[in-house]
Image (cartoon, rainbow, N blue to C red; front, side):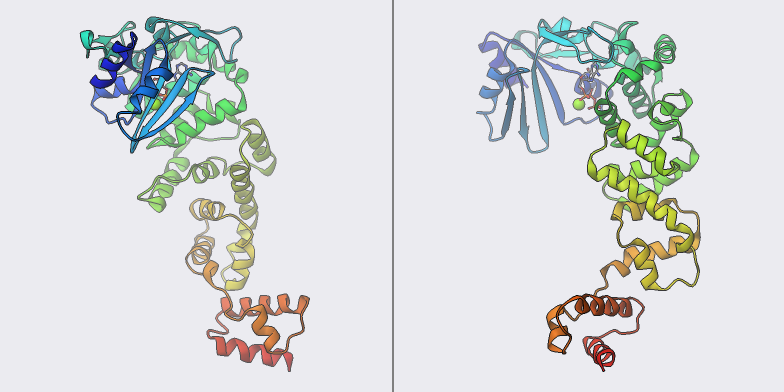
Length: 394
Ligand code: ATP
Ligand code: MG
């Protein structure tokens, strides 16, 4: 940091550490995503910084921003800018500016502090909006009355920080949030999806969803979604299944969308503009859900379990394992995940030809029969499979 500050000063620029990292420094939490703001040319500074140490540099000349990466450290450099919101929900128009204006455009007081990095003022805190007080009082506070109208994604962001940090929405901010909930309709599906993804990367996303339900923000995503105790329990199971990693977003999303009908699912997919893979997870989850009654049949053969699940993505199968409430179905899905999905016949198409099976659709049919026999434990060795085939041919 000191080196960067000196370099900036030599270039005649001012450099600041800003945003989340300053907040986290003050509450004593680790944060490896550094945000730096340059009064001047961020790319010019980034190009000089990358020479100190082998790392990766990506520049975006159109926005005058750059990203540096060293191992786990990621450093975003931006040129100080001010923003004007011409229309609610739309992206603002921006122009280069001084640090004060750059701080003014931000979401909450606790995210609006900066630390000076130039040598003469190194380490000085800039706190224009009482961010430090709000950190101490554990409050999430917007900077001005029009904040949620300008950019309603801040509604979701406020809940995310509130729950992550165990803070509270400051009373006026809470009032304005309630007043401006309808402004969420002005935000594009892509931006809402991005905020939802950030929530699902939190340690306990269900807390944010529960709070969003309480404040009637969640129904804006889809009226049929629920942020209740069921979800809390299922998210916890998802984490236990996924340790040591966090559950993939698709698994959380499938659990969140579990109560939705096919039609509601499609509405969610299109309003969030979900990418293909996530859309598939949600559709598959509902596909399996529709089979749950069959899966709950106590006398189901392994090959039938396999047939009921084989065409669906693993995340969707896992979501149903967690969400279904029939113990028998649960057991069957477990069996599929732990064992059935790995079972394959040993003989191949060419083995079958060698045994005298004619080329063509017959090969496929016999391979399927062998697969079924394997799954149901009717055959366990290559030898056994050959006997079976010979029997069928004879
Ligand atoms: P996190 O720990 O979640 O990464 P962060 O504060 O680093 O927190 P980012 O999403 O990385 O959050 O954003 C960096 C900074 O940009 C924030 O601290 C905030 O000041 C500002 N910011 C991000 N999104 C918005 C927004 N929608 N409106 C205003 N300011 C925003
Ligand atoms: Mg960040």
